[in-house]
Length: 177
Image (cartoon, rainbow, N blue to C red; front, top):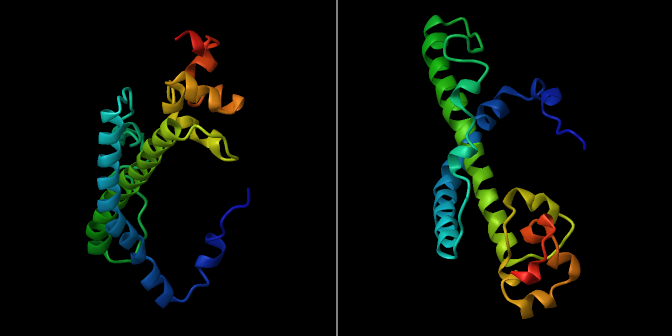
């Protein structure tokens, strides 16, 4: 897979572009987070109401605070020469960005993705070229596996896919259930 190129170009960018570009990192988060939170809440309720159990929590996606390599005392800061700025602004920047923004926002989007994978596996157990990536949201049975008549209409590979049919992974006969 080809890497995204950023570091090789950053130094060549004019200061005005950096001054505009750097704060733009917060706008997508500010504008999308309320909607993602609402979506997560609604999908969780949906999954609970249709019988979902053993669904991982949001906090399973947040890294442990102690796992961060740097802490407040040994954080890496960009020196401006200003003691006040280095001690105050950079400390706030680090606490906000490295302890809150990055781990919590990445976890939120990963969690939302996980929940949508579960919904997809429940309602749409149909193979496509990216479906193996949905294994993080594996379920015991899809909606279509609950009814013998509907199950028989599925393609044999969809009927036996372990991402949405635990019985095929266990080696047990799903028909006997």
